[in-house]
Length: 342
Image (cartoon, rainbow, N blue to C red; front, side):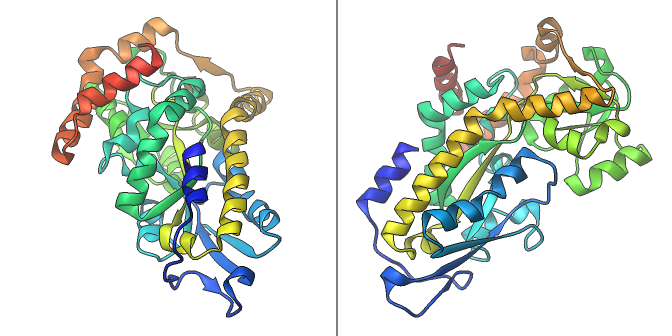
C-alpha cells in the first residue's frame, strides 16, 4: 500500500536486532539477513500458495541478501501474531480474525452483511480499513505490515444440506471467529471453534455437522468426501491474512533492501487481491469434476439468516468491545457502510 511506501521512504533509525534474526558481522550495507516466518499448516490453500512465494520473492528483490525460511510448526496458530510481537519469530503469515475477539476492528469483515465479496473487501481496505489496522499492528503487536490478502471465499461444508434458516437449527458447525459464532448461536446452530487439524476427524466422528472454511482449503482437504454438501451462504465470505514482520527486525534491515522488499510485497498483495477469484473458480471446478456442486443460497434466504434480529448479536459484540477499548463502534461501522454504499 502507498502508506507503507511513504513510511519507508521517510527512513528510520536502525534499532537493536532481536535474537530471532541472524545478521552477519559485515558492514550494514552488506549484511545478510536470515528471517524465520511462522505460517499456519494449511496445505492446498490459497493462503499457503501466497506464503510459499515470499522466500523467492524476497531473495530476488534483495539479490539474496535477505533470506526467509517458512516454518509451520514453530508456533501455534493462535500464537502466530504474539510470537512476532515478542520477537520469538521475526515474521508471520497472520490472520486478523484470530484477534477479532480482542480487537474487533480486526474482524470487521466477519460482520454479517457488511462485506459480501472481494471487491467490497478491497474497496474498504483501500478506503481506510487497511490503514487503520496497519496502525494497530504497529501499536499493539510491534509489527510492520508487508502485504494483505485473503483466503478463498468461505463455504459451508456439511453432512446434510443446509439450504434454509431452519436447516441451521441444532447443527454443530465449526467457526473460526466470534462474529460468525454469535450469528450461529442467534439462529439456533451450535458454533464449535476447532483448529484446522481437528476438523476432518471431528467430521468423521460426527462431533460436528459441518465447517465454515475456505473453498480452496476445503476442496484441497477433500472435506466434500465427509461433508458432501458445499454451500455459499455469504456469511463472513472473506477472511483476510496479512504478512507482518517484527518492527525491530524490519528496521535492522538496510533501508535499500527494505524498499526492495516492500515493492515486491506490494506486487504480491496486488496479485493476492486481484487474482482472487481465479483461485476460487479453480477449486469450484475441481469439486465439480468430483461430482460436488457448490450451492449458492438465494438472497432471500441469506436475508432471513442475516436479518437484524439475528445479526444484531454480532454487531452488539463489536460495539461492546469497542466501548471497552475507547472508540465509537457504531460510528466505525457507519463509516464502512457509507464507503460501501450501504
